[in-house]
Length: 153
Image (cartoon, rainbow, N blue to C red):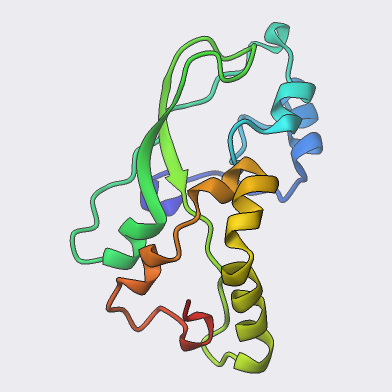
């Protein structure tokens, strides 16, 4: 949020349904929600008469941060993705990754990374549509100290 030069007066941690309700009751001015598209909860919980809008977001260029640019990308939420969202909106696409602590214990992380790698084709065929966008080569091509040796795919 701060990379986008947004300076909120206050930050509340609410689950998505509570956030929608709080926005509807004007208890908050807006919320951030990171989710694969289309999000069932946004389809089911927000109505056209709510008059909610998805605000455009763009990531400022980070020329010296190859890692950040691999995680976030500018994208477009197509018009009518949701019944209540009739115009296309410039927004951010966020890729999915397995994150670990700097002092990682590979005994716990590597088995999870292997399960994902070994079953990626099945997940892409049978799992959430977001799995279709997972490409293990994205991070393996980075020369970055931020990439965990535990999650080598």
